[in-house]
Structures are given as structure tokens and as C-alpha cells.
Length: 102
Image (tube, rainbow, N blue to C red; front, side, top):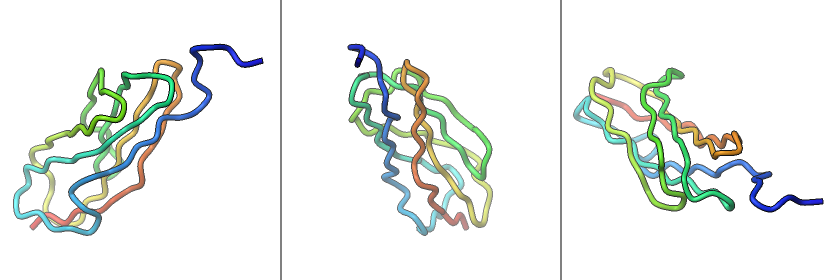
């Protein structure tokens, strides 16, 4: 039996920019993503850089591109991903992408 209003699927999270393997000439980097959920219109999303949680955004609208701007991104190779959680505590995680800061 399925219960109406409950989400049995995790949110789906896609990274948009900076493109995987790209270079940034500034350490103030904007990380763009898009998260969708079939049952919920609002999500909470978390930005991770090099495996460390850096920022949280609440009330991210499902299907609407969003971003985190992170100052002080270290020079060199950086790995980033985004996780988003719906009100049913289901968490979706994007791929991990790399950005080089020089």
C-alpha cells in the first residue's frame, strides 16, 4: 500500500558549474546545481568542498537552479559535491566534480 504524500525516492542532484575539470582564476567560486524531487517542492541542500560541509541552503525550490558562493577556496585541486534532503529525510547526492583554482 502506498501512502500519499510520502517520498520513497531520494532527491536527484545535478551539478551545473564550474564544469568538471575546469580552472578558476579566483578563489571566490560560485558552485551551481539543480535538485529535483518528485514529491516535494522545497529541499535543504548542503555544499561540500574536499569532503567538508561548508554551507547549507534552506527552502531550495525543486527543479530550479541554485548556487553557493564560497570565498577562500584553496589554490590547487578541489573536489565538490552537493547533497539535498527532502522533508521525508531522503538524501540525494550529486556526482563529485573537480575545480582547479590558480
